[in-house]
Length: 269
Image (cartoon, rainbow, N blue to C red; front, top):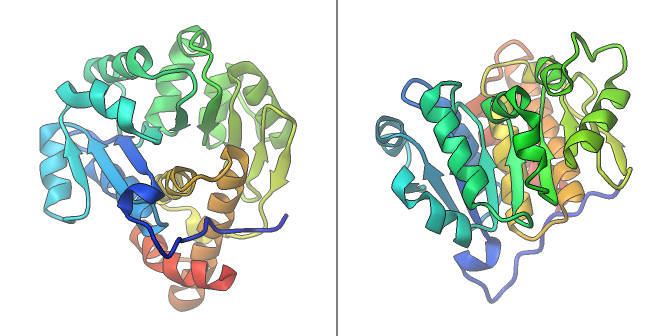
């Protein structure tokens, strides 16, 4: 596969590069909200709006001044104006998070571009038909093996990762990124991709949140859903490889991956 970054135009502004709405984080998981928001900006999108709890937004605001913050009572209007919605990173699985996910389902049109990760996938797996009946057309799921097993209501998917990714795509009508040591991607159009970058340096809390943000940021800039997913996975793994050389595979953390995004981009320019 040929990896092509979205083009930067000489005459442009922040709106040119897309608006990401990130419905993520909770009172005790602000890190996921921070990582998935900042990585979307670092990969090149024009705006990232974080919709979360007041406590989470206050914590993230103390760490960065680059994100726009959105209270939950403004969710509907921000869904309308978003180019891409990412949902689920650190969202939690409780009454409040389920209520938020219900609102997301209610207000999001079927043709909106959506990336679902982590607790968003776990909420879907509890009642798949609620999500399936919406008929979303441009969705990316990013499960690790346990989340994939929940989505398929099976005990284990590790015996056949490719088949599991295919089954998830067929069941939910999504492009599936099944995250393993060789991440495999399968689209509803039967397009497939096996990633060649990355190592156990990525096996660290927060790594998946960075990936979700990177993919959202690329798609916000106009990339095709499948190609954006593939490029995001490739660059994410490359960030891990770059930082592993510097820090060893033991010591790479999620923030290090974000810091390596410029170096990864330079390898493709």
